[in-house]
Length: 462
Image 1: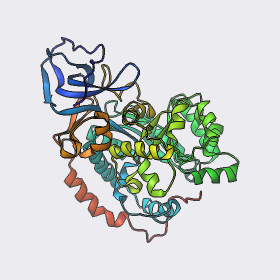
Image 2: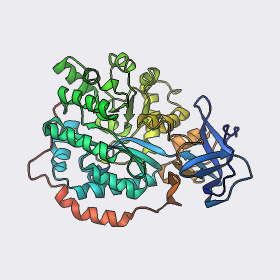
Image 3: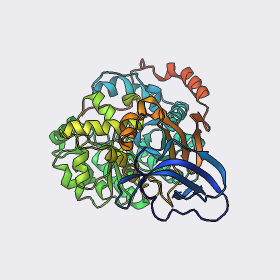
């Protein structure tokens, strides 16, 4: 399949009795000591207590409660969707071929005024089923009624980084609700849920609320997840109104100095004057890029190369399915590589191996989990997907990295594992009832999508 490399160091399985899970015969995607992508052929992965104990080519292996023969498959770290709105799968395709202001004001925000907690629950369940089937093991969600999403995360077995979104139009109550959610749900679902404060964006959350959010984040050790510099038009409007870019507004509010971290969704409007501001941040800052939505809105690309040069991790995302139409991070990986090549006018950037790095370690760092997930290595949580490359669209394999990025599809994922628990095996979902979810959501759609009331939850004016 590809030239083999030595297995990473310190991967010998222990002799501590039967393992929980043993995956044998796979080609394992690993990171070497320089964090470059490498592949280990004929590898076995030993999992114990939800943690990877070894990635090894040894033939003497422990017994295991569950053994998966993965011959002919690639084992990868599970993909991470670094920014989405899972309940918005219910609005997939409802507002097409529109500029952002009409998309928000005429469709999305009027419809979202109808949302009930049950709608959020069903949308999140459908989204989680889609992501499990697409090899996503962790997602960062930013939406409303997030207790319902947290319950679905617990049910589904996925890992998630969750924040309750708020606008300044809600008054102090919105910010307090976001804080309450973050503190109550932090560490829930057996530790699979991490939380963040979630102001919507600098154009819907004023300077005072952004500064208050920064203060709360520092006091409670919470990261912050928000939209900012989503498009160049937003940046131009911010400069005209305030004399500052959205990134400079975040700096003034103190959000770039938040030690637990700041996750910025989109960033296609990040301009040259923002780069030294981001480079000078005293807290960890990351950007989530969702290229398919930008192509649909005719926005520019996230400046991935410039961000990389100043040390800002860029994770891969889909945004919500209302704008992106899918939660397919596999597609985001391929599009990120292709869009960056076109933007830079350089076919050598972004390479397939670089795209895989963004999809794994950089995405893990973006959601604050860089020490726990994102690579197949001893001590990391066992978030693993198996990919079947036997189909005609992936054969022959001359360059395994290129095959994974540009030829493989989310439907080639056969098995999805989180914390050592198998959530899908041989394409069969094991934790969620997809037909029942689709049927119940369908019954609720007429009331959800009604716009005759004339209300909207917010005004897009930027």
